[in-house]
Length: 253
Image 1 (cartoon, rainbow, N blue to C red):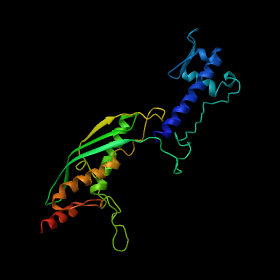
Image 2 (tube, rainbow, N blue to C red; image 1 turned 45 degrees about the vertical axis):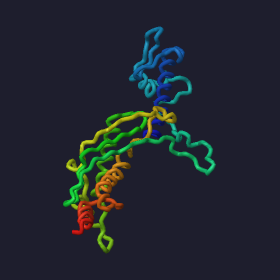
Image 3 (tube, helix red, strand yellow; image 1 turned 90 degrees about the horizontal axis):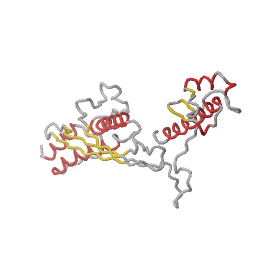
């Protein structure tokens, strides 16, 4: 989304900016190379005259006679964004790279396990990620935290359960468990930025930065805690009852 829509938005905005400059230069009777664009308005630094954004919008939509020759009314622009590097020739194995950038992340989890109840308690959670240039820090942080919460649910709680006749018995949130603020710990985020050379701002994907590694990190932490007992879990979610039964069996109880 950031790579494709971000790029399309950038190039469309560039086209719109050029259109505003052309309209203003024509209305001011000056060459377009001599005007200055700032905050949506256009100014002639020689004479000091200018056209504000509101004035340019009014000309484009109402005063058609002030438009440059060949200009249609309105301020509509279109840009079709192609995948960067997607049009290159296939590699020797016949493939074409359709995703030009790669984000990176790591998850570190400190987890304590109650051997009797089988209840995992996340004591500390650190995630480091590199999504290139961060366009909006709040959105990136929100996606990261929300993804981790989703990953905690996938690792420990969330499951579609069916009875022997194939009927789903977890059809409402009364039966389908989701993590709450009690299960999601404070998350420490380590930011790193390596801009991509293939995108307009250096941005990469960030939507999956929390979710993809969370379930793997949590399940690995549980398996690390139970490894001295020879107990390993390879199916998600890893429920408390499953952990308690496996630990009890390992102790011969």
